[in-house]
Length: 286
Image (cartoon, rainbow, N blue to C red; front, side, top):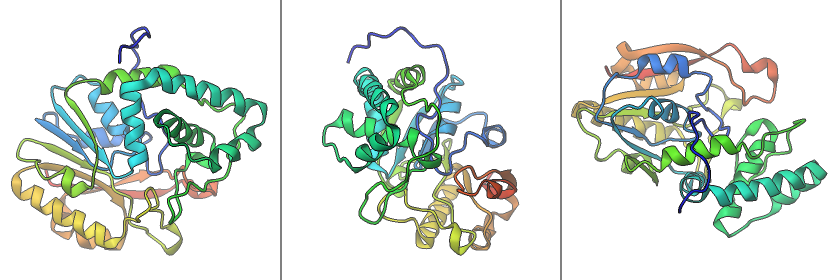
């Protein structure tokens, strides 16, 4: 589709706030990313903070990004192909929200549009106005987060949507909805893989894996470890983010020399005092 907007010079940033998002940790994470790689794979894309940061540096690489959340992947594809229509839909949401925030929010939350543009604008609208920007669905796949407390949420953020759209139109970028095993089957020596799965809970109450209808449990962490080892044998460079939990430390014991502890704030926590002082792990094989 031909774009009618002026060229955007700003670097693209995540267009949704995602639980476990890496915007705050970019300065730390980028210190551990290889200077050169043939191809980049990120199968737990989420908000895409690391991907957008790297691709905006003008690196000469092919980019293969994916996520298992079909609504999120549809949003990426819609911004790439139909950003003008999406902006118009979000502007309408913004106008209606301003008139009566609470009533309009819950009306949109209960809706289930079938049209592509309306599906994506609903996702972005709810993400911008819901509590803490938390994307969460219940076992039936229904979005169930309450209204957030915002004086003036930036529902449209047109400039960033245009920057994201222009970036994603590159022929070197592939976006798919798929499981991480499928996404990584062709990764080989010379490639770089960044893994940012739903974190293994560090306590009974910390379990948050409901980005999709099927939770990401310990068996999935074991599958991920198995894939990590397979890629390592192929000569692929891998960087993994996860929680500092005993289970993850034990699971990746073979790569203990590549474990780095980093400090992170948990902006998704409903109790503000619990958003600071957390330690996460970066696990690398290089």
